[in-house]
Amino acid sequence: MSMRGIEIRQLESIKGGMVEFFTPQASHETMLVQIPAGAIDELFVHKSQTDQLLVVRGQFVLVTLVNKKYQYIALSDDNPAVVKIPPGVMHGAINFSAEPCFVVNAVLRHRATQQKDYIPHRRPFPYDLAAAQTALKKLKMTNRIEIFY
Image (cartoon, rainbow, N blue to C red; front, top):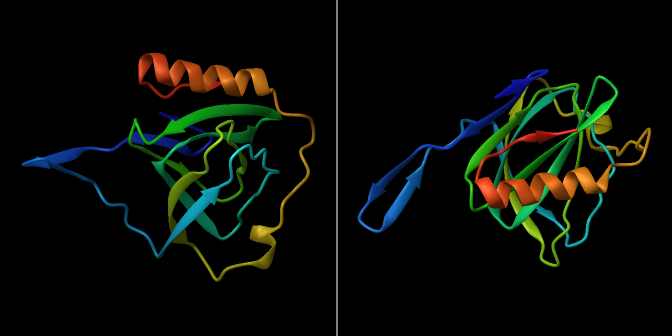
């Protein structure tokens, strides 16, 4: 699935006995990111990197701003998928849970890190929290990642 360069890809796995191995992501740098319980994050836009996000514990809603509309993409450790966010796409996070969410970001660097890449931007208009919650409910019911507007 792809929109404005954002890609969502289910991870493939290989089972070895009781252990399941998932496809690793090529990266220049790998970060473990904690999204605090109850977080409703501002937006970020990276000019010099591509984010590749994989939830390893918990759940959250990725918010992207495309064509002056928010898109809500629910992600969970129950549904291993990588979301690839290219440079120039504004994005933030919502964690409705009472538990923190842990995400691996396999960063692809396109040039040296820019300090502006990590400065939050104010939301141009409020998030639609009902749409974000609907995305999470739908993920739990269908085990399929969908985009909600």
